[in-house]
Length: 164
Image (cartoon, rainbow, N blue to C red; front, side, top):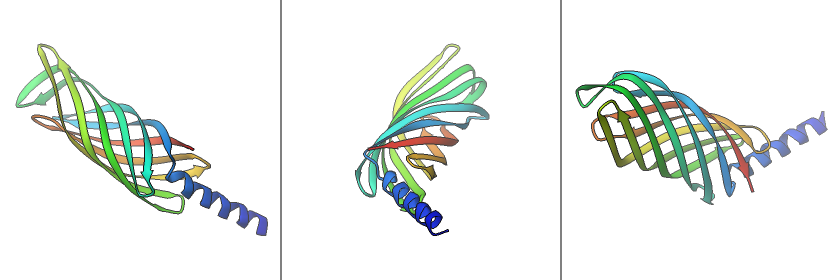
């Protein structure tokens, strides 16, 4: 029994240390709400912890392919949406639970039938991860990407590996 408790304590301590890792990366998948439609979104992210409570993260989202979506009061057909972002990521750890926020800039592309829009705007997000073993965490997050005429809101599940 004592060995089991010691092993759990060591695992918890190592998980907390991994949350402030120098390098991490992972994959995300979830649902994007954009205009009057919902679509599956998938993405990747990578980052680094520059201080114990703050890091920098970059990522890419394929926000989905919409058959028809209302954007700027016009029904857009066959609209593909994607974005790349760079964000500051403050965080705090409660043992193996890692809670964070994000704020930064993103560059998005919207392409559809007779329509194309590319621009930069602000983004933000919040989330939590739980270290299931060693350097691997799973979590959930919400990210909002501001666009010229609407917002894209993504609720996602993610898996991340923390290195160094």
